[in-house]
Structures are given as structure tokens and as C-alpha cells.
Amino acid sequence: MTNFNLLNHIKNNDEYTVVWLFNIGLEKYWNGEVFTVKNSKEDIIVNHMEEMNLLITRKQDILILRSMPEKEYIDSMCSFGCEIPQIVCPSFEDENRSISEIVLEDDKLQDQIKQLIKDRKKVIFVPYGVSSLEESIAKKLELPLFGSANEINKMVNNKVFSRKFSLEHGFKVSEGKVCKGFSELEIAAKDSLEKYGKIIIKEPCGASGKGLWIVESPAKLKSTLLIIKRFFKDNLEGEWLVEQWCSKKADLNYQIYVGVNGEVEVFSIKEQKVDGTVYVGSVIPPDFNDALMKECIEAGEIIGKSLYEQGYRGILGVDAMILTNGELIPVIEINGRFTLSTYVSFIQYKNKMEDKKIFAFYKKIPLEANSSYQKLIDVLKDNRVWFDGKKGMFVYTAKTINKELVGENGRMFGLIFADDENEINEQYANIMNIILQEK
Image (cartoon, rainbow, N blue to C red; front, side):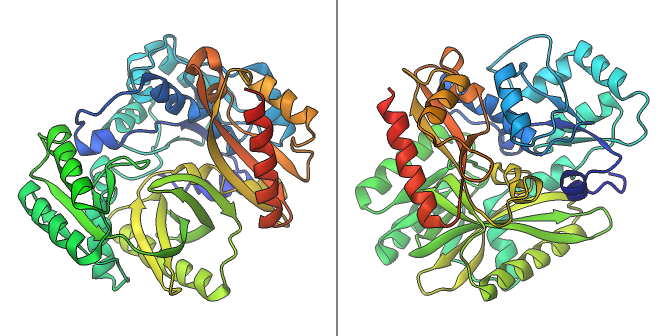
């Protein structure tokens, strides 16, 4: 991976050229793809979340996107302080396939990238995460790859691994059990539900709230087990997790950078806003006391150093929670890849907003009237809530709210800047009222 330091590249800039790829959804290559209910419009939205990569690019970089962004969006990102890299796109579109599959089949795109980097001495390929596909892309482009080998990532991106890792390192964990096969899962779930009253069942390699089931009644458990048996019929004999649903004060996330020489940096501790099991936003910086922040940093350093010894390199995103009694459970799961939270981790530094409270969030919105990025900006500007350089809201993806592309319902990724969390809540309520009245 050379001596490249990603955090230095993003925060301070350096001599490197990064070739970026937002290959979200790669868990299916680690887990063995199973049948799930498909929502083609939702899949398209997820595909085009890739535009948020512009939050961390540098001018000399190269960003692979499925299609070229709109000029209005690029202009807006420039005005926000983002550096726009060279953007390259495949010669064909296919919303039903991963971006990595498309890149591997597009010889013309590969040749274009090789031509762009041929006279540059320090170039590195940085995907969202690394599976065997991204390893193949790196080989075709003849570039060093940022991150760990596919097999190591597959090991780390597993909720069972996270639980076992926590126990081995003496971290506090929620009450629960690792189950081998469906029969053991069924018995453990029934026993745990009777004991705790509310449980969560976890499929080892799900992401974005998928493969998680909250159960609080025998009827819900029965239906959940039927769903698992039907949709995971080829993977039923693998490992599963059953855990007590904990009463919590807050969810949080912290990012860990593991360098090639063993350097470990814990950065961007955030309070996470979660709807059930699905991430909806982050508060930066969080209102946690110094002792809790120190505990997160210490846990992160243990995680980073231990995983370095096991061969891991790159970014880790760790989800954690604070119980109602104030205790920290430092690991709910470890993500051995970028997370959506990673891309908003540098806003304070790059935009010189260390004195502001920031809420980074996404919200599903109807697109009857707000049918494009520019129309949404116009509405927010007319109502004087668009980011003015100090306060207000900025929207950092465009195609996820393009009605022509995604249909009647889009997903708005926003940043609200304010002096405190109360002001954020007021702004958020006002902005949602404005947007929903526009439908």
C-alpha cells in the first residue's frame, strides 16, 4: 500500500493522486449473495450516493462515477469548498450491476485512467471497501491498493467476529449468544425473548440495517424465523447472533485509521441518530463528556493495533452505544471499510467549521415538486435556509433527488450548520416543513 496516509491526503493534501471508487454494497461478495426483495428505484438511489465522495477528493485526484454530475451540482460543491477532481465514467450504464463489475468490463475506461496517471509517480487506488473485484481492478490499473486483502476484510466485516473480538479484549457486550445453524438460532431466540422481553437477531454480514430483526413478541419471532428460513435457505447453517436489546442513551460511531506501519489514529467520534437499526444521521461533535471520549479513543486504539497484527490496513468504522446507566459498549460492530459516516468526517477541518455544531443526515423526500437538485436549492434559498457560509443547510448529493432517475421518492443527503443542537433541531423541523409543503 506504499507509505500513503489517507488522512493526510484529505486534511492537508499531499503529492499523491487518488483514484476513488464508491463501491457500496460489496458485503454481498463477502457473504455469498442470497435472495432478497429488490427495489429497483431504491437500488438506483444507493448507486448514486457515490457523489458524496466529492466531500473528500482533492483537485489532482480521479473519481470514477457511474455518470457525469450536473453542472449545477458541481458548481454548488465548488462553492461549498470542495475540490473537484477529474471525473471519469464508464462507457455504458447498468443500474443492476455494481460499479466494480462495470469498471472491470470497461477496457475503454481502464485505458482512460491509465492515460491520466501515466506521468504521475504517486498514485493509489482507494475504493469504499475491498473485495476480490477491487483487487482485480487494482491489478488491471497497475496501481497499489489502499486497504486490506479481500479475505481479511471478509473476516472483519462480520458481526460474529465483532462480538468474539470484544469478548477476547475484555470489552463490555450486550447479553447474547453466537448460534451455529438455524436450529440453534431458533432455540436461543425463544429463550432470549422469554428472558429479556426484546431481542435482536443479526445475520453476520448485513449492512445498512439489512439482516437485522428486532423482536419483542412471540408472534414477531415466529414471522421473523419464517422470513429467515425462506430468504436464507442456502446459508441457514452458518453463524447467527441473538442479543438482548439494550436500553440506551445514545448511539455513536468512531472512525479508525490503521496505517501500513502500524500507526493507529482514532478520529471523528460522532453521535449517531438511528431509526430502529438504520442510520439516519450524525451529530458532529457529540456532547459526550471527556471521560467517554477518552474511553472511545482507548478502545479504538486497541481495535486498530490488534487488527493491524491480523493484517488489517485502512479505514475502520465502529458502531457503539452508551447505555442508560452511562456505561459504554465500545463495539456493536466493526466495519472494515468506509462508511457513510466516513465521508462527512472531515467537514469541520476542510470547511473550517470547528466552532459549529453539524448534523449530517439523510431523509427520504417526495419529488413531486422538488424534482431536481437545482429546484430544491431554489426552494431552500427562497426560504432563506440554504447554507450561507456560516449557518443553514447544504445538500451534498444530486442524483439521489433527481425524479427522472429515481422516481417519485428520493433521498436527500444534507448538512445543517448551527451553534448548538437546539438550533439544529429547530432548523431541521423548519426545513422539513418547507420541503414537505412543496410536494
